[in-house]
Length: 289
Ligand code: ATP
Image (tube, rainbow, N blue to C red):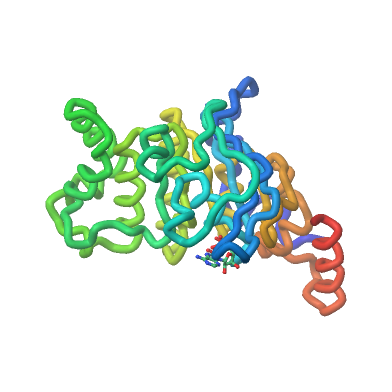
């Protein structure tokens, strides 16, 4: 018997919260097809990854440390070469247009926004200056409209707009990083581990923000090790293991999957955790991949 059956770490599932994100007749926006990525010309890290982020959806990309999640994001945003990586096979399209091979600024102009792991804000700049930098691709009128929108979404940033960003708390810096990405009006927002290192209340706040951002029409690809958080907002999820997609299912199905519950959500069956169970899981993992 499972210890908890109906809630995922106390979080309500997406179907209760984001009906707008469940439209059936979605067009594909972002499509990654059969992607292979190599670092340093020899280290094969992604081995034929395919995933889709439909218009207006929240999609979760789950996986353990080193599975290749960040590499997928780097490939989408044109940041692989900075890390001595390159795409050796496959394609990435936005509304059917190839975007693989474009530079990072070109992918931003094409409609991809990214919040990298570790927040990467300009700590010496004020909150306001960070946001203005994020809006460098839009014209002056749009910049003001986007600032208003970000400040209305994040009260705390509005209240502290003149403060130096380095003095914000970890959660506030994460909000600033998200706000900065929104300044370029992305159609698809890529979030790399936004809950990492944050207290549970702040994780809830970030999760609610993902839903609010999505409700305004922005699709979200959410990379997380916190599967409970990700599957509570996503309508669909992918699980990546050692560079391969091993599960590609509606989030509701992933929430009910025994392996996901046990190894990603920490909801173990009574008596589980023995060496025999681990061996069984490894066998299943091999089978899945
Ligand atoms: P994490 O959650 O720890 O960030 P991840 O799923 O995002 O993990 P990646 O950061 O994409 O995984 O890393 C996938 C694999 O690629 C790992 O084995 C990592 O060591 C390797 N890797 C990442 N960047 C480089 C690089 N610049 N050069 C060589 N190998 C790299």
